[in-house]
Image (cartoon, rainbow, N blue to C red; front, side, top):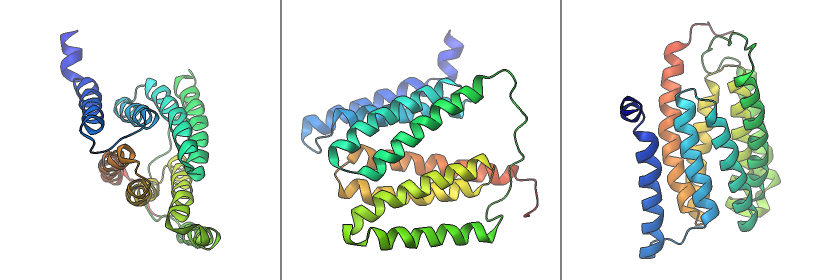
Length: 215
């Protein structure tokens, strides 16, 4: 038991420190954050820690996080993020199933970023489409749906074992800093920094593991 605690102390320290920060922010008036926002970010942090250890419970935490985020984003009117939460909740359930099934297949070899120029040309084109489509909605409206796009296409790249996934998610993380600050979602704003660190380190790790030439 003591060995388990020593190896996994961050599983307890991280959520506790975040919870104390949440209480302090509300008690001091620095920011009044929603309990739904708190719960979503809390379980999001827990899911990262569990998935980093390759524990299936991480997908349960991911599902829980997205359920709370759906409620929160509906309340503040970020419908793009609401759609994103629904999709990623479904992804969490499917991923959990494939993770625990007994006949897991060998994973694809990780491939380097920018593997197909036409893929990135499509990403740029779709970004322009979103900007034109949501232009009248202002910066918040554009960023709201742009983050959905980068998140979903990042997941497609993840399935294909392309390091492009981390580039797309990092782009989304940078955009989320602006979006969540503008909408007063300060806990999600702080979460973006955690994701930037996690996705940056994951990108570096995947680049080291890349062993297939650009096709």
